[in-house]
Image (cartoon, rainbow, N blue to C red; front, side, top):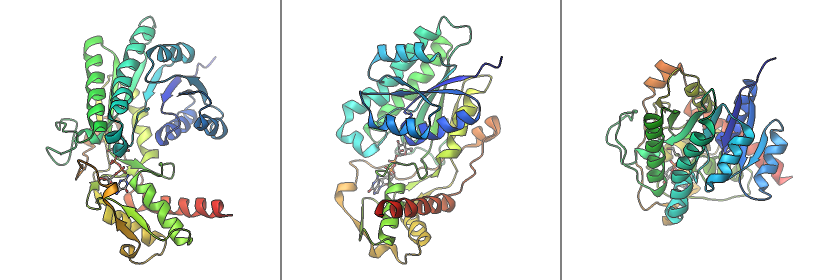
Length: 330
Ligand code: G4F
């Protein structure tokens, strides 16, 4: 009898959770997804889109619920993608961000230690670390060795989460890895993030249902890749003989202005400046000006490569959003 590997994903309702669930399913895994709250509306969409995912109740704010979720799902691998992930929101909800994005990881590691301790094969743990930890960058490009200087409550919480993951690996010999992922996007991205906000607005402007696009800082530069490529790196990390941390990035950086250029051109709209207005509302109290990652370690040790380039990514998102908005308008 073939025994299927079992994976528990936190943050299953987010962009990465969906990509990872799909990816693990194609690899033959039994996939479990942690969902919080009673009657969570996002859980419905997971049931519809991914009927193979078994949902288990639990919350990163509640230790005992994590113990129950691990007991119920009996995973070989845990992917912790759950977080308050919107940097701008973390300035207004700093305590909540610290609790979920930071302490939530400690709770999960403790729960794994408790439940996994008695098992023959230890549970392998993946932590979704973030390039936001580099913040006011100390060197360019950023590698696994670059010191952290976070610029938001989100970044600070992610540094705690990253460090506690390393600490549990070193203290308790746990198989715990951190993937330091740079920005990764796609049609499943939430509308609050700048790439999808732009591609969705471009689609709406093209269809004549929106006239302007209001943004904050247009000078910030990010290393943007495709989320579908990045979840593969998460899985690869947990298949290694030893746990380790890896930067996952494309090695190319673009400004928001360059993103606007590509997105408007993808819809045959000339001169994006006539549609875009800046508003103080969308500026952050402290900004991360430039991120660009060096993924040499992931390339050499994991054999990972990004497949989708920047223009292709943004064009894919614009095409998707034109279809999506056209259907919504009917
Ligand atoms: O799309 P963003 O909100 O992503 P950000 O802050 O880089 O964070 C994302 O990537 C991280 C990886 O490095 C993740 F850890 C994190 O969870 C998240 O997925 O903003 C990108 C840039 C910022 O510099 C922001 O100031 O776009 C700038 N921006 C300018 N106008 C805007 C806007 N961002 C948003 N969301 N909305 C605007 O109107």
